[in-house]
Length: 180
Image (cartoon, rainbow, N blue to C red; front, side):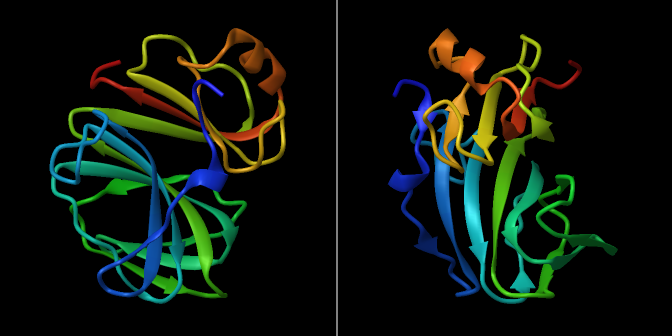
């Protein structure tokens, strides 16, 4: 289906430190690597305590979507995150350390190279306003013939899909140029 990144097609790769796995969902520009992306969206399985990788000039928004809870220490501030927690935005170049307070968890990551900025919200689907560089929705429940954790590119999908998603439980992502 046009504009849909299906969860069933994701391939997880192990972290270098052995503490988890990540599956890239979408990246801009297409084919960009960690040094050249403008924005990157992924899910990750955090399987053990440990540090997060540092990403200079990158801001992150992390949302726990299954499992947990997790204590995340970022630049000296401590945050406890679980599946009901709001998304947590933080600078990717600050020291970040995870401590699992339960078993492994699955999180949703949005990484944005400055000067871009991201907004991630949890709730029923409503179409974000136009003008963003990218507008996406991660399904948290089956909706519109799609499965949980499918990602929809809201600017590339059929208008009928947008209507069918109305009110579904999602994480909505809007990526904006600085100043908007």
